[in-house]
Length: 203
Image 1 (cartoon, rainbow, N blue to C red):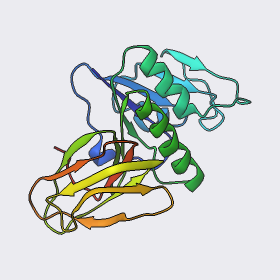
Image 2: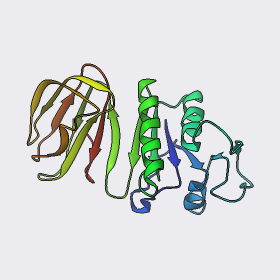
Image 3: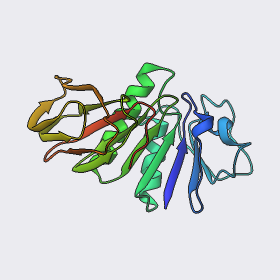
Image 4: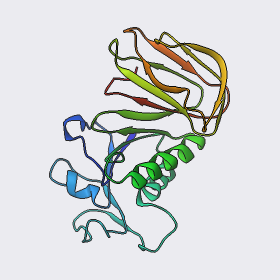
């Protein structure tokens, strides 16, 4: 079962997709983006951005004076209710500080075993904790960033390949790689990688 979260950043409506059994959560002002598109199961936030508390839908209201972002609270709620995978729309774009906060938050939940994927207007971002296969049309870009210290990173099947290299979050070695049209294999033996794919699909 997937949990679909919609936050207040740039919303890629053309990519928005629900599958049978998905749980849909509006995160503060993200609710306004989807309330007329699909049945919302829950709304989470302090509602300082939305400007009102929704009616006729389950609401988890938080005090605006808090130590956690609305996205973090929504992901925590999802995980507490059995979520294994969360797809987040509206978590990228808009205010840079919000984008960075969301990516940092996603990393924290990746460490807890939750699969978190951000769908943006021009990219998809997710976390690799062990192995992944990526695919994109030849020439499309993808980047890999160490969220902490990533040990023994290997990339095979891409324009630039590496084998067993250690990288950390001060050295963006993995920026602007490119697909060759074949499957690309990525592995990391310690730490977490943030993968950002330029409008490409993920196998």
